[in-house]
Image (cartoon, rainbow, N blue to C red; front, side, top):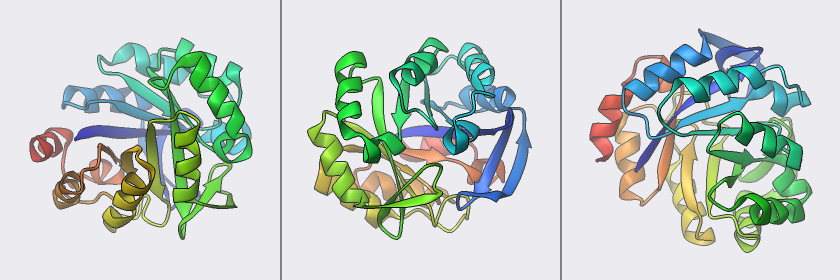
Length: 237
């Protein structure tokens, strides 16, 4: 199972939100320093989310992403506010190995199909963030009429092979990962699932591995010292 330490960036700072709430922010310092730290401990990928871009399309963190990509020797995947071909090109041009599409998956699935055709499925993956099973969009500020699984099935039809699946109620809350929902997403869509939201212990990682989940994003548990990437890596080998 692959491990993806998270770097969430808000106004050039590394932060964590509580359940996606922009009003409940904990600041953890410099994003580049954090990325270097996690890479040195054995991360398979660095997972970078541009919260400013997700919320309002801001490009304030573009330079920070490029600095992270240059500073680490592992691939970087990035999401947050990617809606146009120009957005994809900018993130890949900054050095990211692949981009994560969010809101556009709900609003314009034909755009996803076009991006897959232009850039390849290895460079374009889908982010499905759910509140009570329903897909949330626009930086988690709105909930769509599609269930997460239904959206996943649609994305599979358009050529997507990998999905970052987030249970928003668990994100940043240190309450344990929703293994059942991750397995349902994997089994019903056929997508490779990267679990995001709620990983609090090494047992969560063991349970995800047992369920056949492809990868896990590590967030607040790392920043609060529950375990480090090396310990996590040894758990899922």
